[in-house]
Image 1 (tube, rainbow, N blue to C red):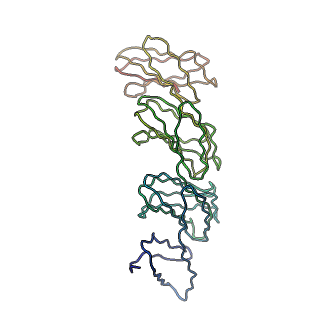
Image 2: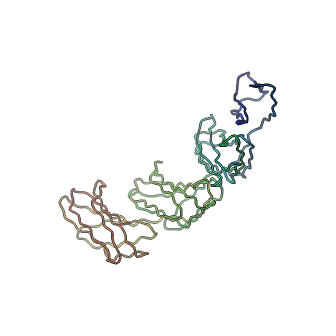
Length: 350
């Protein structure tokens, strides 16, 4: 309407779509075409990009040869969302490319989506309020495609210590943000068990963030595992972000277990320790003076499967000092230390 160029591009048998930017004003627009050869015949169609609602129904999309597709949605600054592409079929069995742009047209994130994985997922924490766009492009000019798209808010909740909880992500592309409160110096363990994804055989990524927002640790899980969280660095609310691979649906059991830790005194009373979930470590500390010769004994060792555990001793600066394999059949093991410096030493039994 203002007589300014909005977009330009080249149309050919291998590229049949031109995507316009978000139009800034209402009115009449002029489309000019210049053929590279004549005579030329076109069949033209102008389409409005469909919109998708957050936590709404899936949108079904189909594209013919060499045609790109685009959807739009409204996002709020700070809002965490997951985009899922599912039921992906292509005429040649190859991938398509999904790219997410922000309100100003800036690139946010992108990924390749494969029919063999039944689709893919993209994650977004909106940096600003506005209209975002998702573009899906074919990998070849002869390729056609069809798929479903869902847009979901992250599931939120809290983890209660020593209580098993079920996490269910029933929408493709959906993630979860789970919080727990801890005090600096505490030791905890997060157990993942009975994990099932749809489609099957997808990994799930678990990220633990500190109260200041920095990443503390992460793990990717195919079936079950225990993520040990020793000597937490800060007091406050920690966040466990759960992100299934390829935007898969997920159901799993989570247990935030109280840590097994303690302090030992040289020539003091025996300490007794027991872990509560498979894969959980035990963390012990003691103070020693430079030059002091110390022997450490693990006894009355029992394990659920009769196999060994590994004991590793670290110095005040975190350096490895010594380690040993400990067997229930030998009723434990022993480690020896001549302290190279004064400070607090740590013993991890894994």
